[in-house]
Image 1: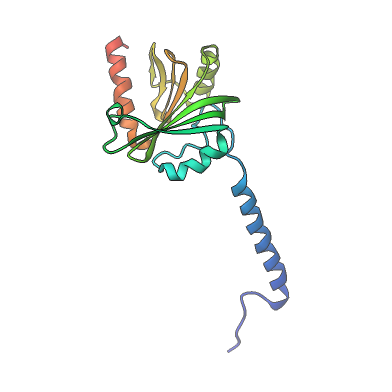
Image 2 (image 1 turned 45 degrees about the vertical axis):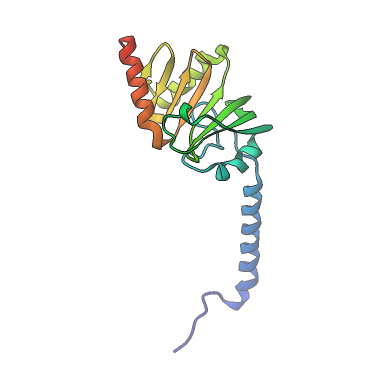
Length: 183
């Protein structure tokens, strides 16, 4: 019986060089700053359901200033044990440095608010419709795309992004607002 090596001896140096190059490329990619996103998707640092410990390095790379604050538990209806907010300044989102709030309930990222300007509302709305189609809710207070877990708020100009684990809460909230306004 003849034993065949998986790698021929003359290919080992080439394979070693290829593995080292791939490892170097992976390390380089891991060190890159968080990518910029448009309004049609949550900021790249948003890892819904992930802990603050997991998300914090992404925020540190994406924000020019980061402040972590414990918030009153009673202000977070989905939280049982903790409510923490990471305030991010200088987040590059939808082509502009912005302020954002990454909100954690029970040490799981629940939602992200990204402040916008009132003058951007129509441009942002058009981009969201182009990406996600007809809004699920088109209300005076907000244009919601529950199918994409996001909304454009009008009363306070900002974008809202939220995770799967709290999506039913937001669907119910938007449904209730629609019923209250007769839409």
